[in-house]
Length: 103
Ligand SMILES: [Zn+2]
Image (cartoon, rainbow, N blue to C red; front, side):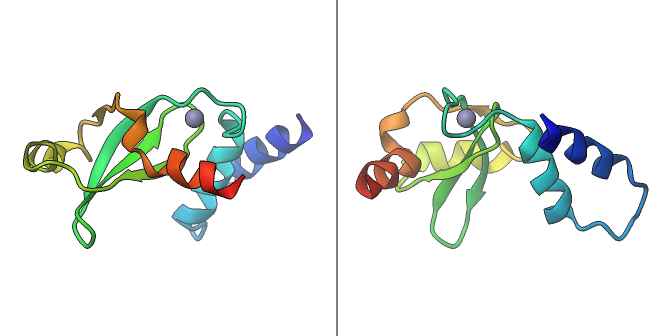
C-alpha cells in the first residue's frame, strides 16, 4: 500500500527529465502483481530482429514473446502498436515456457 502511494506521488512530480523507463517502472507497481495475475495477453508489436510477436498482459504489464509466428500472424501484428489485440494461445507464449523451466 505504501509502495503504491509512493509510486503515485512520484508520478505527480512534474519533471520532464524523468525517463520513460522510470515512469514505466512506477506504473508497473500500480498494476496487478504478475505472480498472482491471471494474465490477459495482447499482441502489442512485432519484433523485427527475431521475428516474434511482442505480447503484454494488460492487467499486470508483464511482457513476453510468441516465437515463430505464422506468416498470417506476423502480417497481422503490423498495426498492433496502435491497436493491440488479444492473444488466446498461451501455450505458445515464452513466459510460460521459461516459467516452467525455472521451477
Ligand atoms: Zn498479468
